[in-house]
Length: 124
Image 1 (cartoon, rainbow, N blue to C red):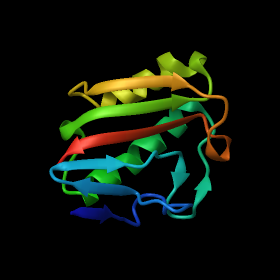
Image 2 (image 1 turned 90 degrees about the vertical axis):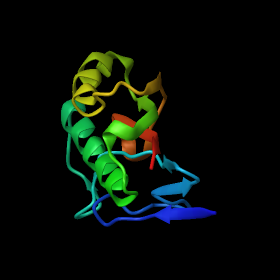
Image 3 (image 1 turned 120 degrees about the vertical axis):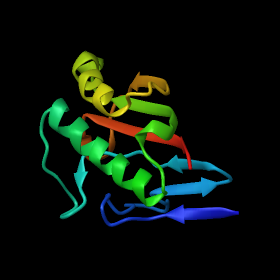
Image 4 (image 1 turned 135 degrees about the horizontal axis):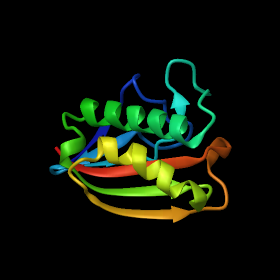
């Protein structure tokens, strides 16, 4: 059985998808970008600030699902510019201390022209 995860502490879905879905003992989150959930706006400008907002959004979804960063088993990270990789990694590493499996790719464009997006799979 699928269970939708929803919280007002992370951005509402801006399309036909859920913030996250739990199936069995796994959470699959939708990709999170640097939207401030309080007002639906992109306020963060640089890669550090945007990555911090993304991590806050992911943290809210993990919490709503009854789990946390320590239970994340896989992340997929999307960067608008691979030159931001080292800086992105510094922020990312503060949150994902258990070092889950990860893919990180550069993409041509991200929604709302943000600099990064991250999705996770976590044990619940």
